[in-house]
Amino acid sequence: MAAPDGQIPRRHVPIPGESRWDGIGPLCILFLVLLGISAIHTAQLASPGSQWRGQLIWFCAGAGLYVACARLDYHFLRRHAHWIYAGGVGLLLLVWTPLGIGRYGAVRWIRLLGFQLQPAEVAKFTTLVMLSALLASARIESLRESRAALLRILALFSLPWLLIFLQPDLGSALILPPVLLALLFLSGLSGRFFLLLFALAVAFLALLTWDIYRYRNFLDENGLRPDQHGGLYQGHSLLPLKDYQRNRILGFIAPAVVDPRGTGISWNLRQSLIAVGSGGLAGKGATNSSQAQLGYLPRSVATNDFLFSVLAEERGLLGSLCGLSLLTTLIINDLRIAAAARDRFGRHLAAGIAIFLLMHVAVNMGMTLGLMPITGVPLPFLSYGGSFLVVCCVLQGVVQSIYHRRRNLC
Image (cartoon, rainbow, N blue to C red; front, side, top):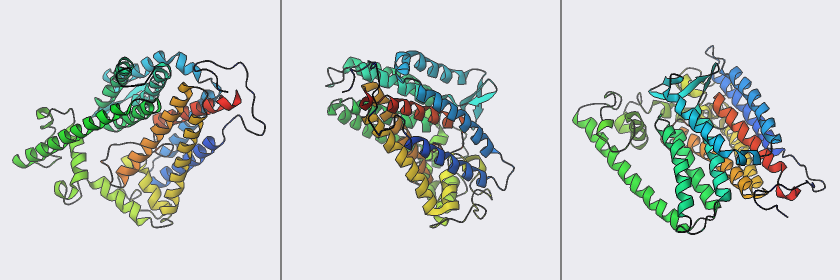
């Protein structure tokens, strides 16, 4: 029988023949990281890059944190959720200090203790912990009865979300809302809330469409290309979007109109589609791929945001399905552990982590296949990136802790 929410049973009694540790998650993580390091290495064969070594080092650090989080009782996170949340917000604020590092018109990194850290990746985790702790103790029923709790949850959610959006980091900002909605749904919130939210989403999409239409007319009236105006339009819009973000949306909606030669804002997408399509069933092989090694798919994105394209070209449909199957197995395993969690906090936390991974996979693969605008979202455990890889390891370590203390051990 499950322990009351928030209470810790005095002793664990394992079911005969059942392991107290989950082996599916660690195996999936190991194979994904090895597959990712291999693809990163082969993508840089024609250049003196050593990102694969850096990825290996970061994975070793992440593996250590995974073990530490797995052995730590996850209720520690609930007891200190406010401090964890404050730490994530504090890191986000540091990007506007001299520690902040700007790249490509955005300030998303900080230099801390000799390392470059992306605070948004840490803030995703700290926000998830805070939301799970609040929903574990809040009484969520009808929309009217839950109003005070919802206002508090939305306020605490909005602060890190807004700080991430203003960096600007649209990709990371897109990940958090679905996680919040999934947690609210899991809490049993009234369906009227989701209907209201759907209406607001439709209204926002209409406003965004109108804004993109005005932006396109602004370019035509002034005889400008999307990459020429230097952000002149964004001061005339009600939406807090950067013009390069509007360019990405235009490149997704009408690439032949805004970039007929395919040499501008739609270049990365076109080269990604060529890489995916040319891989065939079994791929070209590690030394015969062309898009990343010859630089058609820019090396600045080939090893991170577009690593799936490299994987598809080198290993074909079979290799792509292998990576996708591992990610799918990991997500389903997280949901399985969420269902077996001993309390609401563990259930919300594990489910939120599963949705976190699912959104990264969906958005990344969607943009590399031309199904979504390019937003710069990495692929879990595959894409190059130290901050994101370490955070993913920490998240899965927390899931392991939840499994170790699941209710069928009580």
